[in-house]
Amino acid sequence: MRRSQLSDFFGGYWTDSTAIMADAVHDLGDSFVIGFAWLLSYLAQKNADSAYTYGYRRFSLLGAVVSGLVLSVGSMLIMAEAVPRLLDPVMPQAAGMLGLAIAGIVVNGIAAMTLRQGKTMNEQMLNWHLLEDVLGWVAVFVVAVTLLFVELPILDPLLSIAFTAFILVNVARNLWRALRLFLQANPDKAMLSAITERLLAVPSVDKVHHLHFWSLDGELHVLSAHLRMRPDYDPRQQMLIKREIANQIADFKLAHTTFEFELADEPARDLIEP
Picture: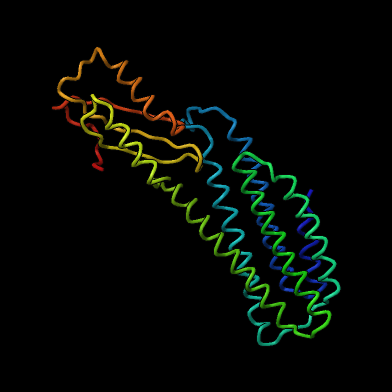
């Protein structure tokens, strides 16, 4: 179990350290990630129904967007507190900072070691969050030890600004990726190019168009395409052609695929041209 984020905020207030407050905000963001991961992993087990015909896996993207926004707002609040302190730095309680830093390193370090062997993407991502927490508390530890011997109160707001800026950069990158997937952007350009090449390698396929490639949750992808067949295409061979297509794209592990066969002179029915 991780230490309560409430104790982090209390510790930051008690020691008058914006650096600890910044790390507390990061831990709070991690808690949202953990909570959403648990909730959405439960929802993801639900089968597709008439309301969500592809299932419920896209709820995980909603969780990523919400947790990213919460962490971004919290980080900006810490920035608003830390930047003015550069002009009028306050000497924090170094001994209290040191004790909290040691506890943070131990607790988050144990949690990171526990999830080190995780196989799922959620476990691996959570492990990265925990490792970032450990590094943040190591930085607090170094500053606390320095402040015990040298009175440089500006180190505390400098550390909080640097740590918060690092978090914001990473959150912004992950939030942008989640938003792109929400808008059904291509999740992997290299994979789409490879899939197109595999489809065109099927002897009976003359052209691939109306190709749509998007992701349910960042892990499971969906593909649909119209395949223009060669003039010598025999409808009786359809089962063999479908089997060959399935073999060509099997190693891409796509969650859903839909292919429509078209004859050479058959018009497409899509209203929106690609």
